[in-house]
Amino acid sequence: MRALFSIFIFVFCALLLPAQKVPCAQLKPLKILAEEPIPCTPNVMQYYWFDVDTSFYDTRFMVDSACHIEYDFYEYNNFCSAKDSIIPKAGITTYDRVLSTEEISNGQCFCESCSRNHRIQLKHKQRYVVGMKTDCDSIQIDTRITDDILAYAKEQKLKWYQKKYKKGDKLVLNNILFQANSTSLISRSKTELASLAYLLKNNPNLTIEIDGHVNDPGEKNSENNQKLSEGRAKAIYDYLIKNGIDASRLSYKGFGNTQMIFPKAKTEMEMKVNRRVEILIL
Image 1 (cartoon, rainbow, N blue to C red):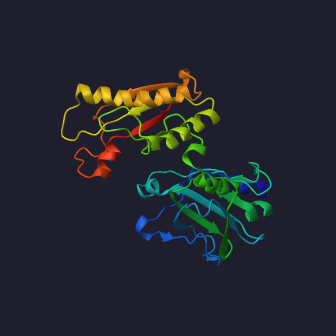
Image 2 (image 1 turned 90 degrees about the vertical axis):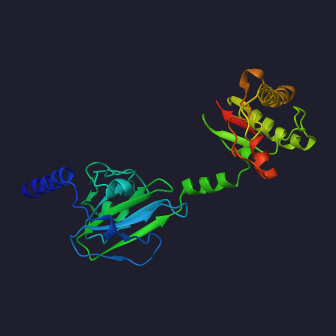
Image 3 (image 1 turned 30 degrees about the vertical axis):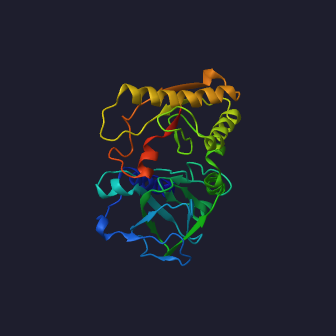
C-alpha cells in the first residue's frame, strides 16, 4: 500500500510540476535516424531538438525492460519562448494497442511493455523539443515508416487531377491558354480542360469556382479587363457543362488585373502567369 501511495504521489507531482527547461542555445540536435544508443546520465532530464521530416514519422523510445523512462514534448518555438507547451499523450501507442491510463501518465512509464514500446506520432515538417530521462545509462530510438508515410509518398506521385481536395484548396491551371485579347481557347488547352473534367467526374461531390485573371501591368482595372477575365472564366464554365458537368456544381468570376502575381510583369513568363485561370474548391 505504501509503495502504491508513493507511485501515486510521484505521478501526481509529475503532472503538476513542469520540467526544468534549458535555454534553446544549449539544446543538442537529436539524430533521429542514428542507430547508436543515446548515452544518458541516470535520472537527469536531457533536452534535444529535432525536425520531423517525411523520411520518418513514427518514433519509438526504448530502454532496457528493467528501467523506466519519462519524456516531455514541446513545440520548438513555444519551448524557446518559455511557454508551457508540453504535448501530453501525443498519439502514444504501442504497435499492438493503445496504452491504458494505468500504464502511462504524462510520459511516466512504470511497466515493462510500456517502457519498451512507447511510440510517438508527430506532425510532418515541424520542429520539436524532447526532454528524456531514464534510470538506465542509455536510450535507444527506433523510427518506422508507416502506412501514413507510404500514403503521403503515393499522394506526391499523383497527377493534380488524381488527388483529393478540400474546401479552400486552389488549383492554378497555367496550361489553359487563350488567343490574345480574346475568350477563344487555344487548342492545346483542351488537354488541361479534359483533366479538369476528369477530376470533377471522379469527385461528384466537388463544387468549384472558376476564377479568371488577365495581365495588364501598371494600369487600373478597366471594364475591358473585367469583361475579358469573366469571359475567359465563362469559356471554361461552358466547356465543362458541354462535357457533362452539372451547372449546379460550377460558378465563375472575373478579377481583371486586380490580382496579378507579377504587378510589374516584363517577361513573357511573368505575363503568362498573370493571365491565369484558378480553380477554387468550394
